[in-house]
Image 1 (cartoon, rainbow, N blue to C red):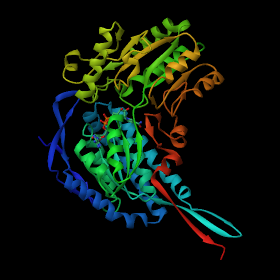
Image 2: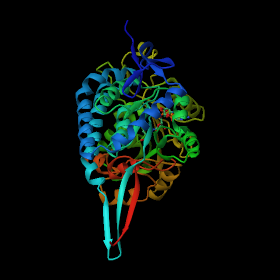
Image 3: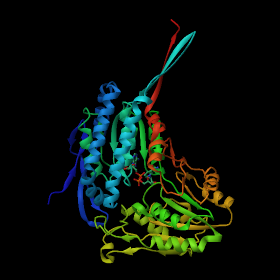
Image 4: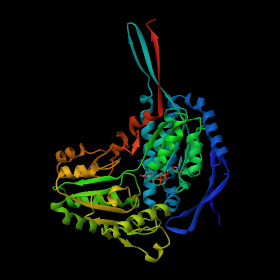
Length: 481
Ligand code: NAD
């Protein structure tokens, strides 16, 4: 049988790795999906050198041409979306439709950046009787983009598009837990650009650490967990690199007593359990007023009960497995400890094929009824299909509990009154708050900065604010002559 083998991409040349690791199907762990080359430290250096050598040519390419190539790259994503979805689903455990939609959305991300680049990069000039100044935006240089596995294409495009638009070159390191589909797409996109502009390294912590410590890398843009971000910050310090971090969240949903229960439970169920709960701004804890708690919980249980759990290629599935053994074990252990402490754990949904479910990293969507506000399952980012539902007495208490976290990525408020919801939203310590929805609309994706406060990150992605992450300022001053 032909096994897909994904190599490194350095200077637009496929480069065999120093070693290889297998990528398996998390929905049927006996099945191999492919193998991926692992970069040695020398190859990390080769990639950084290639990106560095490509820099003057790329930074000096007129903006209009850079934008044109980005539009061509977006067209590659459009074209590949239906073809790549199966491979992405097999390696990540995400449903086929989710993978296809991810690549389509990633194409929008690339186009949004292409649309805004020319105006964003215009120098700003000021003069008075005594002098003038031109404030110009310059690329950082070589940017390292390191991403997690849970939405690999969209997370990468949020870095690639603004970085390239601003004239930087890139070394991208996908996650070993979902490298294949992203690598296939990146190879097709890279072929459009001059050699060395987009380089792709595979590997785990060793390759990542060699990249973030490399002296030619000027900026690290990272999406993943806080623990690794701390290591990167330390490694980047030696050569004073700029860092941008998109990290985890523990997003609260505050339900008010005037809520449209039917609408809220439908949206919250999707907001918590799509991608089997494995996305950074998933709803991860819900606060419900005591006055409507039982009615709300029963309706939410009925909604969550509709999920059909199965293999991501099974068209009947509405929820797939978790991506990897470590995360699966973490969530199972979390549930076991909660159960041991007396929590009311409610497992829901239908296993499409109970026998086959033993062959992969499956968990049923799970609610925790009347979860204790300070319990571990409420306090940590579960990053899995688990949703604790906490009862509250008054809104001040709900806000206090929601903010009682070192994380502050997303959040949501659910109410029939926009004024009441806004009043609560403005008190939340978060980078993003969604009202009566569990994610950004298209207009929000295009215009709003994405990211979190406190330990959920440093900096933002998307919009002009996200593009500004990829420029340095160079002020050129002159006298009145
Ligand atoms: P992770 O931190 O374990 O890994 C992320 C990436 O870092 C991988 O490519 C990994 O190989 C690499 N890496 C590991 N050690 C490294 C090191 N020492 N130096 C450099 N790179 C290293 O995270 P994960 O398990 O892949 O992803 C899950 C986490 O990501 C969750 O916390 C989730 O909330 C977060 N996340 C955040 C966002 C966001 O936009 N805020 C989006 C998706 C996921």
